[in-house]
Length: 350
Image 1 (tube, rainbow, N blue to C red):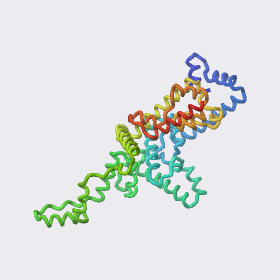
Image 2: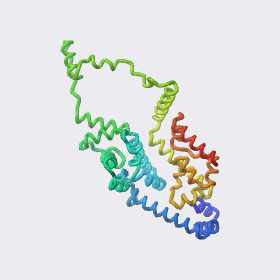
Image 3: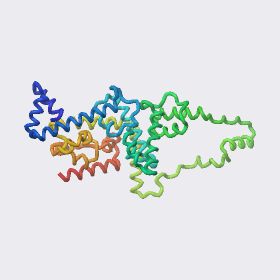
């Protein structure tokens, strides 16, 4: 029986709510089935303990989160403090950035170091190169962002690593990286005007690496970013650009943090409403984390959800990150439309 049911029994005055919940469970499911569920619960608790040992060794959040899998970081969130959760969200944000870079392998980015090591042992040339590139990326992130923030001293950092790190840096961190680059490569001072127009122009041409006329295009009107698009394509592109601008009011980490809090609130409400009957027996036996019912794809969530939870969702619709982000920025997006359609398709099958 779920934690919510145990808490409910405690509120009603049960002397030993856990023992009472166990007795009710045996009556409801039968001895064999209840023992199977109890074992699954113990296995899940043991797995959670192993996860927390990796994420919070010695009771403190690990200094380097790059080698911990998405799954383990997600499982650990419910037991982390606000500051620790913010650090985990920052690491997940950097993974989102990495997944959008050219040639990125999202399936590698979300795996643990141990999982990458096992894959590397049997990988061919191309696969091996992709895994080694991901390992190199993690090492760069760990060195440049120790403890989740930009290192205090950048003077000894490799320039290539600093250049790659710009993609992951917050605006203030990017300014610090740029300042370090300027320190290493100070710009040539501009020549003092002599009053001789020809001499001054020749001096400026030497700085620009060519004639000043070659740079005149900078004074021209910028090209149309949507040139060649149909009216429909232009409308979609403009809306997406507006959404990006609106998102500027919040960082991606702030939106993710707010969504995580929303998802856990829904989980607790649903657990209370269904007496903890959220996961199908098969999903429970496989050790599926209940929070994935509220954050994962609709077709996966509905496949793992009990009928009680599906009925609860009819009055309390589950919401993906894309839909939540739409509510924050006030602009509909293609990702949000896709999520709504997927949820509608699942509800229509009930």
